[in-house]
Length: 272
View 1: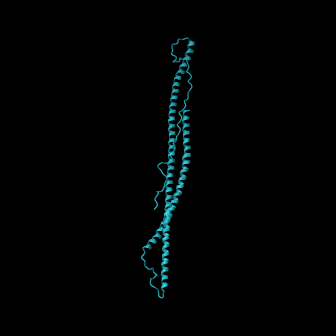
View 2: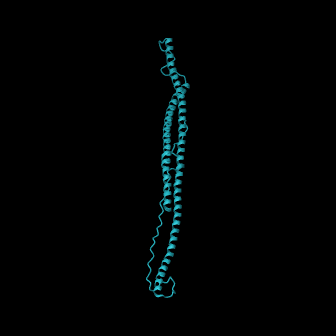
View 3: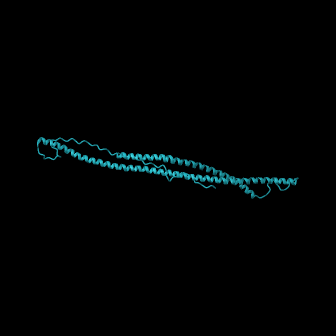
């Protein structure tokens, strides 16, 4: 009964641990962690897309605004094909119109570039803020995921410790039951040894008394000495002692999570 109780307690404890692992680690905690990682992965892709768009916008701004800055520092000389000299037969009004048309076109193109530069600059400010917000949100989600994983690892460690404790308790229980079993068997063996002596003496005494009654001889023999005319006594019935039960194999739960291992997140770099 003691060995059966040890086994029953061990099986019940290990079953509770396995159920806890299935429910908490592979169930609630793992699903929460995987859902968090899925969200963080989506956010990471959004941040990457945002950074790529910002890089493209930065290149366009550099090109456009660079052209505006270059034009501002330009040496004012007449472009080829345009001359401040009047052409042959050209009236003054026509001369002015020709000059004005050329510079109006140049001025319009310059203003377009200048407006485009200002627009791109403003858009970059907005997009930079948006990307930084996305990056901050993703970093917060990454931290949340790591916390969820660490929490799952803590629970996993607790379950592993409970499993190991169940095996230790079983070993202690088995050792105590074994000691009690061996003491009981040794006690019975000792009593059997005494009973064997009594059995032999009793048989000898019975035979001696039968012979005494028949011969009327004096009681001068010890009851432990069988008369020569007495047959060998029947052996005492054999007592079969139970064998010691082999200990059950108790395998502690293997950890599935290393608290020192964190989810592989890319380093978060600030936006330029």
